[in-house]
Length: 171
Image 1 (cartoon, one colour):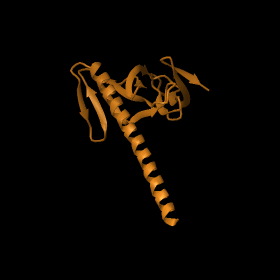
Image 2 (spheres, one colour):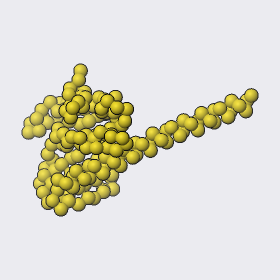
Image 3 (cartoon, one colour):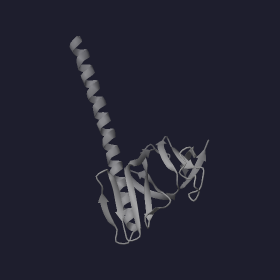
Image 4 (cartoon, helix red, strand yellow):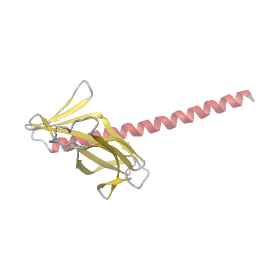
C-alpha cells in the first residue's frame, strides 16, 4: 500500500513536470516568433539596417537615420482575442538622430500556432501585463514635449482590450 502511494506521487510529479515543460516550451516558441517578427518589422523600416545583440540582452537594429532597440524582457504573452491561444505584444523603442521618439508596440495574434502581426501601435504607454484579454499599461499624464513627461508619479495605470484592431479602454 505504501509503495502504491509513493508510485502515485512520483507519477503525479512526473505529469506536472511534463505539463510545466510543455508550457515553457510554448512560451519560448512564442518569444522566438515575436522577436523574429519585430526584427523583420524593424529592418523593413530601415535603410541598410543591421542587427546587433548587446551583452545586456538588448537587440538593436540600426540604419542611417533610425535605430530600434528591443528589450527582450518587454515581451508580453497572454490571450488578446477570443480564442484560448497565447498572443503577444512586444515594445520597440525607436530613436531618430539619437533622440527617442514614440514607442511602437507590435500586437500579434496567434493563428493556429503561428503569430501574425495585426497592428503596430505608436504610444508612450508602458505595458505592464497581458492577461485574460486585458492589457494593463501605464500612460503618461503629460505629453512628450512637457518637462513633466518623465515625472515618475505622473503616470496612470489603465486597462485596455484589443477589439477589432483597436485598443479600447475598459473600467
